[in-house]
Image (cartoon, rainbow, N blue to C red; front, side, top):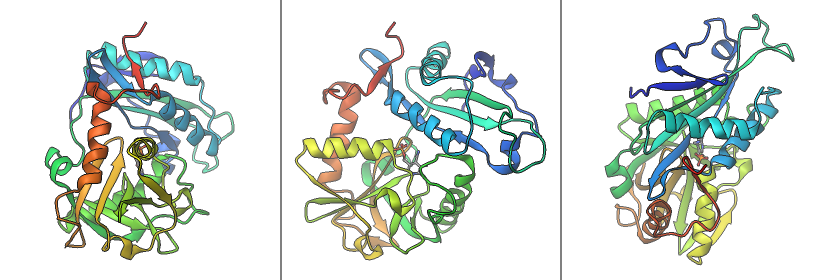
Length: 308
Ligand code: PMP
């Protein structure tokens, strides 16, 4: 894996190899960690972290759901993110802030004041589902694994334990020759990919499953809502039956890592012309335009690392 020089760890920058945690950490045994994935883009004003504030607020929301009190505030974690990009000399990066329960015994219910460690790594990162995937679309399948029902694991929390389900979805898809799996919610309606939200275009309308469909409510998903409104597109957020996949004119998946990735086939059925589509392309153009200046950032989404 790619590395970088420093990791921010509980308030200080440590050399990459020294940023380790104890084998008895609660988070390792019971999945009790909350985290974020954030991209920093190269712009004409230097590195800019995309929607940093929204990501760090979501980190704190995830922590709140699991009764984890961080010893830092939103502003401090945001500043630490900028510092870790700058001190590693990165022009663009993927950032991984993570907070986890430290050493506090074997009890599943961690003590209320048990230790919470926080770290932030930043590494260089390319296209998650491949450059070719971004341009030509990926082959996806419907997973045999469902997303967790809403009364099991709260999917609004981006928690480590949730990613066991994502691993099953992603590993099964890859073992069967697909780039990604699309999971159904526990009621059989469409949910999301292992690490991406799902959009379907049909007759010029944009459809996406709602928060109640066991999705992580993605920040890229919200970005697409805004950009789609600018393009005059209608957005419908509702429970969707599986067959909408096979009747779609276009499908794409969104996520910090995946950005806006077209899906060119599902279960070996080609979608539309089998190579993305015009609405996906228009949204990609607007999205990537945010970083090279073609799309004005009227939302204040770009957080400049070297602003001070
Ligand atoms: N769903 C899941 C399960 C994810 O892991 C991610 C990636 N964080 C997303 C959706 C997309 O979220 P975002 O756009 O905020 O990265």
